[in-house]
Length: 359
Image (cartoon, rainbow, N blue to C red):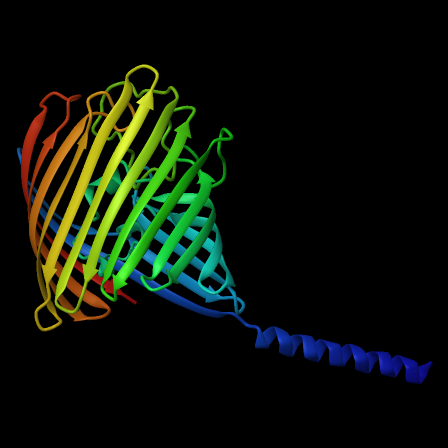
């Protein structure tokens, strides 16, 4: 019995040692990165303003859990007037990716909805943005996030074909609850005919049993310009987007266009459009003068975003100190039109400077 107990003890110790070694051998390779930005803004409007601001601070986590399983998380602290400190945290992405064969993946969790190049490629770190801000459509009609399941393929065949198919909670959902059984559907394809060029098209559909934009509808509510009583009935939402991107050692071009269709029983079909164009020229790898043209037009009978028109033109300059620090300066002109406030049209001239950094 004495020898049997000693043998059992040795076996337990050996099993513990082997298990511990296996666990440490399988330890995930995890990386932590952070991104932030500081800005100065001057607006020459009816009531001029000038101010400094602390922008979003983004904590980016990626981990290779196993050979075919990886994790990505993105956690942002941003301004929010409802907080006592005026800042609140949010989970922007939290996903598990399973590489089941070659360049084909299954992804589950909260993702950036793959509707265009910008939402596919850039996260919240302004360090990587070609301009100071996102295109206008991102604040109104782009469904930025989806929480669900995604089938994805990348770099397939001669033209580096890619596809995305997403079934997820819809626009009116939150990150923990959805009040009906309707799911959003996203389909997207793209090709990369050259090393520097990507062409893509996508389609997004959602049905809102109640017009109640939730956590996935954008970084700000779609009706901030609207002062009337929001429509709360059923609404069908469709979005078709086209992206053309070319980023070479000398020339940078990004064109994003979207056609948004909303339909209600009361006012029928509303046709909305947005378009964004960025063009930059790289001088000695550090200096990038650029221009941008951006507009969005929301129809009068739209009951999701509500009538709106914004036209924006900008000239800018970006200087790359290194891969972790850049400065952008941008001179811009905007014309606003909306039909639900006292004065329907106004112009704004502005100047912005942004320091964007990584750590």
